[in-house]
Image: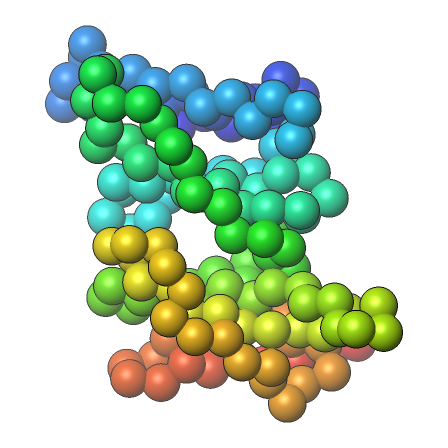
Length: 143
């Protein structure tokens, strides 16, 4: 995978199938970062200003139209995401009714990419999350 942030695109090649390639174009949304999911089936991209995380399915055939899925307001571009089995935890920003931003952690099922549940951690500034065995650990920034 090659990320070209200035062109808002990602190029993906398959090392076992030289004929297979993919171009992900974020267009006007911009591109801050891209990462693999642990099973290498999906690429997650984060748009400029961290407005959304896009989930791109690489197993679609050429006849299937790509309908990417979106996760709104990820807090970070290169952290705040972790995987365990069929679950992904993502730290997100949530604007309450007063316009104040709060940290929220959402758990997604990686088969359907639907949000299983979300919660507000009892932290002032969530720095990252990790799955450790059957537990999800979140910690604060040291700032």
